[in-house]
Amino acid sequence: MANEKKSLKYFMREPETEIVTAPGPETFKDEEGNTIQFEIRVLTQKEIQEMACSQKQANERIKKRRREKRRNPPHDSLIKILWYYHS
Image 1 (tube, rainbow, N blue to C red):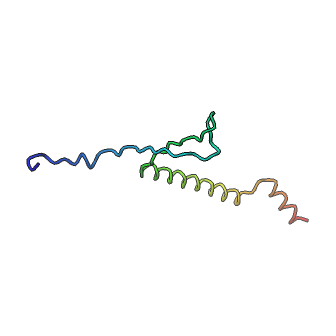
Image 2 (cartoon, helix red, strand yellow):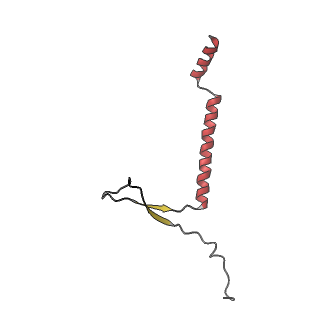
Image 3 (tube, one colour):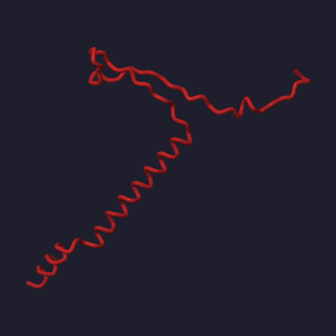
């Protein structure tokens, strides 16, 4: 083993996707009345980070819309406000 070339390819290999089966809840049944088995894939860290980033972006879009609604009320409510102060 001392003469063999040592390689780091073993440590740098792509992780294998692990699929686990688990029984589903009682509400999910097949045609025969048996509970369905779910196949669950373990997510990689990269996939988890991508999902977190997309969720963060979606939350920012929602917050931006709410801020715009508060700053720019619809035309009807503006008329009601002006009518209230005028009378």
